Length: 198
Image (cartoon, rainbow, N blue to C red; front, top):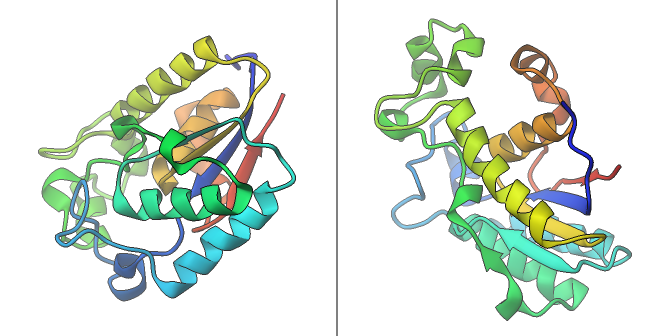
């Protein structure tokens, strides 16, 4: 069921970070690397470009994952759109999927856990981690809180690929199978903005 939105949403995936540039087939350590994964120069440029694009839409509220790559992205954007960085709301529920025991391992190993049947990733949690549905539940909880608190606002959410994909699917009323089929279409690239309006 599609929710009727009270606000206009802008979802932004963080800019490219060092881990993506140097270890693209290795899964993130959760919640962040040690040391934390910072943005690359390309990632900073992606964030600046996003900020320039968002200038035309007066952002009233900015929510961000508390992970470094998102914090850096949010601050770059805030500076460009003249949004007070002290007012950025960092929320742990916007963190990426908890990869648990597969942090530091290959994506191939991760999918082997599900026997390459990706639909299983919605219901079966990774050892010491979470399933896509568990990730979706925490993001929806935050989203519903935002919808209760604000009305007719332009809200920017800076997060990670999977949470944005899952939240957009929820807002569009997509079931898990359809969400999986549309994954490549919905999943944003680094620094990409998704506008979600009624």
